[in-house]
Image (cartoon, rainbow over all chains, first blue to last red; front, side):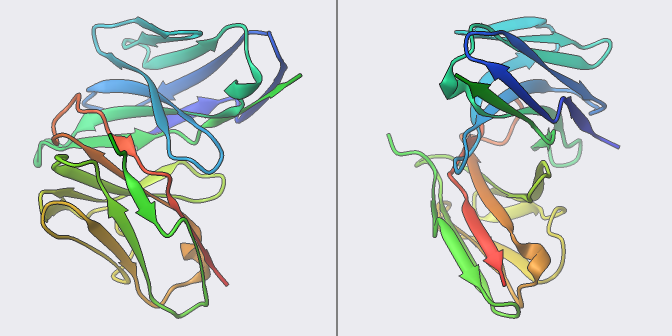
Length: 116
Length: 115
């Protein structure tokens, strides 16, 4: 069964600190892995997208890693800011073999709270 | 340019009533997706449109759920005889095409509460 599991479920850190969020997946075939940030009351917004051949990608203070062999990804946030408080969702894209359509499998997300 | 928009942003309805949720995708995006996000759950795929046709309806949880898309643009998700377990945020996303690597852009969602 295609699944994406994230840890921790929630995390509270102080402003300025770093943190790392984890994502393990069993989606096959694998197309790409994305990290989304979802602010309360908003739709998810893409942070990074990595294909099989990429093992790291940065977007400002966000750095995502991918180990396609172990099917693990992480999202590292450096020098956290209050505005980083949000849910971070790991999404793995497979391809529907019949329809050829992109099928996204979503993790449950990590709720990150940055305290001043 | 304008992003994906959804309406209403919030909907409270009584159990047993029908509701319609609307999605306006980004202009020119041929692929449109509906997802449901229940409290404490990950996003759940409901249905996918390519143009006006829906090649993948596998995520619709019951026959009370249906969706249509007209003119390759606006889509409506209809839930008949709503139940309390239908309470969730319904998210719509669109992408330029359906293949791998095409970014899906999400709308802000419609929060549905069934009382």
